Length: 114
Image (tube, rainbow, N blue to C red; front, side):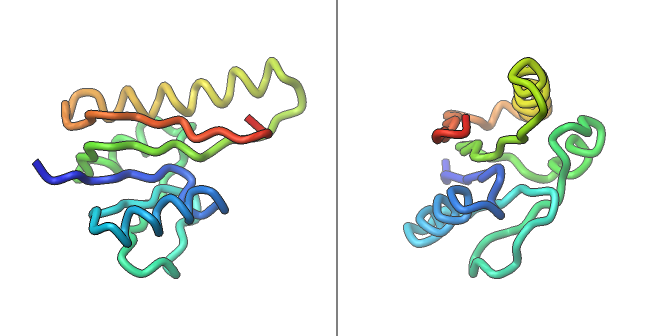
């Protein structure tokens, strides 16, 4: 089975670097973002909002990744709101991908802001 990557937050610093590395090693790579970049050669951009489950399901209908790299994070007014919103984004993504049964590995790439 071919490895296929989905980099969530591919328009950010970490996500664009992860996508670039995967592409350079031959992985077919999709880059999900609300406003995806087109300046990464070899990246298949996917425009989606992780908070819109229906839209996410529609957008990812033809994408069946084996590996998911989550580099996205949304800052909110309080830590309680950070937890609510960011966990919802991860749940929506994984709930949409789960029925495909293609995902072998999920990496939550965190940094200081996470």
